[in-house]
Image (cartoon, rainbow, N blue to C red; front, side):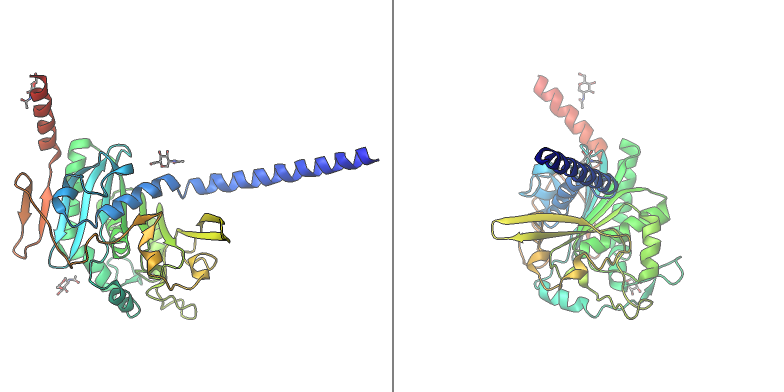
Amino acid sequence: MGCWRSLWVILLIYLFAFSGARELKVKHEDYSQIYNHTLATVLVQYASAVYMSDLTALFTWTCSRCDGMTEGFEIIELIVDVQHCLQAFVGVAHDLNAIVIAFRGTQEHSIQNWIEDLFWKQLDLNYPGMPDAMVHWGFYNAYHNTTVRSGILDAVQSVKMIYGDMDIMVTGHSMGGAMASFCALDLVVNYGARIAQLMTFGQPRIGNAVFASYFNKHVPRTVRITNEHDIVPHLPPYYTRFPQKTYHHFPREVWLYKIGLGSLVYSVEKVCDGSGEDPTCSRSVAGNSIVDHLQYFGVELQADTWSSCRIVMDNTMIERHTDDNGNFVMLKHPTILKVQAEMDANCSSI
Ligand SMILES: *[C@@H]1O[C@H](CO)[C@@H](O)[C@H](O)[C@H]1NC(C)=O
Ligand SMILES: *[C@@H]1O[C@H](CO)[C@@H](O)[C@H](O)[C@H]1NC(C)=O
Ligand SMILES: *[C@@H]1O[C@H](CO)[C@@H](O)[C@H](O)[C@H]1NC(C)=O
């Protein structure tokens, strides 16, 4: 009798173990198509490096944030819009076999002020060519109506000329995430590119629900990472009672949070539903933290110095194009690099 009972218990354990394992496996397979944790930990480092103010170190990829999983990155173009205090780069990550485009977030003295402003951003621009899709004029213009866009398009073009077709990955944190989103959409809609991955960290909402659904159709490989109580993804506000009028995130949110207490704390990366506004993800908690905004995966996502728009540069070898407003791009054409590499090789063989 006792024997039979243990057999039952064992059988039940097997059944539970089996069904449990199977369920986990199915979930895992589904999400691995959507969200790649390893890639997130790499791209967050690019989103961090683009904040660096020593442009020479950044351009030569020798800055203090230019190592680890991004070692060997080859910057093709660094774009500095002095007028609007924007910074972005385009380069080739040979290990990912991809072009990486990264945008810096806001560089204002007070991130607090910038965040307070976010409450009042209006949906005040029709996204061109997409009926009823409304976005915020300021975010749109930061990408479309500054030196940033042409710099990026030029650089993508020259990478393609030298290396042929490559995957494109776009990333950015905060305001840089908003610009990264407009850039990815622009590359798809206006240049027929395919975006292998758009991954943003702590980005604000940028458009309405109609815009979000266009966005999802054109840039399906999007991961929008949010962290704990980070306030910025909660802004500009989402008003559940006015679904037609409110800002609305596009999918796919991945929410980072911790469960447990004391020494038993687990980090969870939750892949959220396809709505863009999953009520069980970051929206399930109060967005009340700036600290949670400034660090993702343990990586610092803010300027290394807070002197607003400070530019540190010490360069004689780098080709630099400056316009009438003092904005400039720093270029490193891959062909020049190749000749340089060959010359180095020839020198060392002598
Ligand atoms: C996830 O990304 C890493 C780094 O890019 C890559 O090596 C790996 O193959 C990817 N995994 C999947 C399942 O796509
Ligand atoms: C571009 O920016 C300028 C100056 O801020 C502004 O006057 C113009 O309306 C903007 N263009 C568009 C298409 O929004
Ligand atoms: C380096 O040497 C190789 C052969 O030794 C030669 O073909 C090449 O042109 C040289 N490159 C430069 C930049 O001098």
